[in-house]
Length: 67
Image (tube, one colour):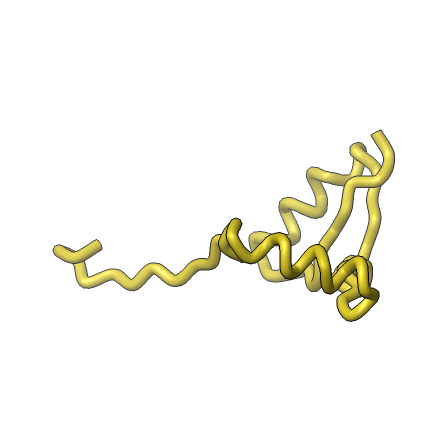
């Protein structure tokens, strides 16, 4: 990355020490993680969801709800 002067931008999410505070906000109904879910799919639809991610064809969080 340094030799070719590439830039890598990413995110790993919330740091573990902050989980307690976040879960307290969920419990107090100050945060609703369900609002992030834009779609639920069955296991048979996972391939098409992953393929559409390659062309930025997804928004929000897709949850596999049926196995």
